[in-house]
Length: 239
Image 1 (cartoon, rainbow, N blue to C red):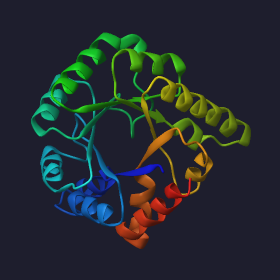
Image 2: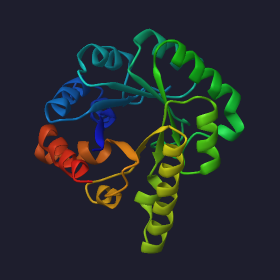
Image 3: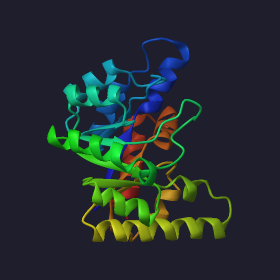
């Protein structure tokens, strides 16, 4: 059965919009776990536009499932990860201009640097995931640099506006999940998945975990965090 990791970044986004101390992403994480989340995800960005170090340190103390820290492979973030020691680090690309992460890491052009980061994190006892486009060459490199898992970027599928586009993008995800599994990588998926698009993944047993944030936080405004997580957890469990 696939698991659900809940990203609480956008609870912090709402907090930062007013420059106040609420809503509290740590409280959202507690509610998510209470409702059955299998992990909590936060992205500590270089510009600190939402999550900050204080959030990550508190989450490290209170998360009962697993804490997944998304971060760029920078020296600053590496130092923070080695200090806080999340259960998993997911390495992602990052640019100041983007609203949200726009694609997977380019391992073809940045293999050596990413490999050094992966090695350092693993030597510290931290499992490493690579956020990656559903591209077979990139996945093969993720395997070669000894990543523990990959998270397939599902944004192109979720954002596609025609049936033909959706079918094309989903076939890439299927192929990526299967080759990742054959290479003994744990395969996860995330970015843009909502309560409707999650249903397309039924039967794709190679995907072990879905990382979902924005759609859950958006629904939580109307239903509360616990109910929003329960609703998504039910859909994931039915896959």
